[in-house]
Length: 202
Ligand code: GAR
Image 1 (tube, rainbow, N blue to C red):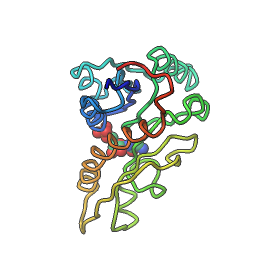
Image 2 (image 1 turned 90 degrees about the horizontal axis):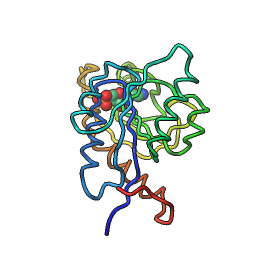
Image 3 (image 1 turned 120 degrees about the vertical axis):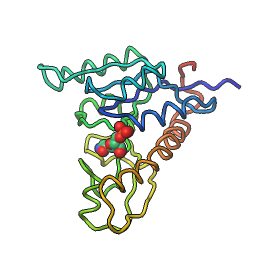
Image 4 (image 1 turned 30 degrees about the horizontal axis):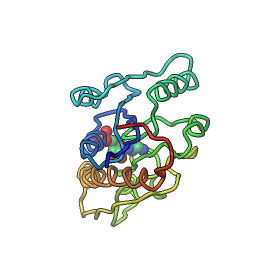
């Protein structure tokens, strides 16, 4: 049976290790998403070069003087032209407006390096260390207008060790992110789209 895969875009701002884990997963025949586009809001994001080497089309969409609305219009156009079904935020550090999220409702997923609802926002790992928690982790969720607050699809936990630095804890969480995100993207697509719906051929 031929799998009709959804068309995915990955949005990044930096090194793109979660992007790599998604691209790797998508090489498997039974992964339900084909990532056809990587978009960065930072022209210097190292992940862009990695995506290009992997043969994926990339776009650097820098902030424009005309503001967020014009930037998001451009993003929306790119995604629409690319017939994108699903957007995966992977270290994408820019807030999307309620209007943009509304246009792509239930089609944007994010990975965040904390056990949400704890420690939303920036530097989640440092927040966890500052709070003195004994467990940290990562969360994959559906993106809604409120930051890091959409429906949770799944989490992975890691211990916080005595004397952990932000770097050590971040690495431990990141290793879990690389497993969790592809697994939950696949599950979300399988659960969310029925076979009766029109699909883009993979
Ligand atoms: C990851 O830890 C990701 O969870 C986090 O940024 C890192 C990006 O790493 N995202 C956020 O904090 C979003 N709020 P990567 O570029 O190597 O995937």
